[in-house]
Length: 99
Figure 1 (cartoon, rainbow, N blue to C red):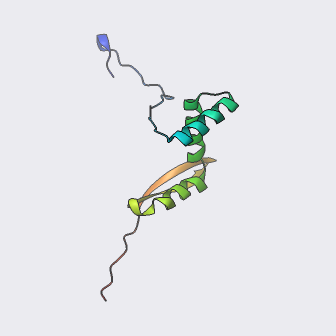
Figure 2 (tube, helix red, strand yellow):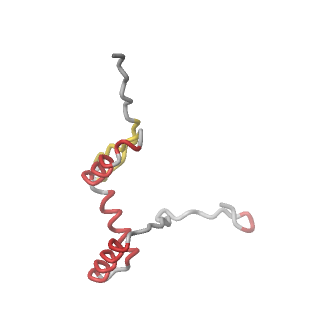
Figure 3 (spheres, helix red, strand yellow):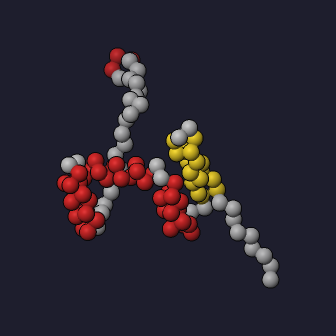
């Protein structure tokens, strides 16, 4: 990015991206109570829970299994050097056989 005077601004490696979520009233109340019990903000707790889920192979696979018919792609979670990486693949299409 070029700033004034032709300088190039570097981007932070730990830059955060805003994602807005909308919760039902019941989920919001649970999140609020858990945040108070943990002594953190609701936003901070929600971000932590999302990160926790995205670092768990079982939860990633469970979420995909719940929505398996709505996408032709799948994530294959794989541990590399102790870190969970996502391999993005296209699902095999079901072949139609003549009767």
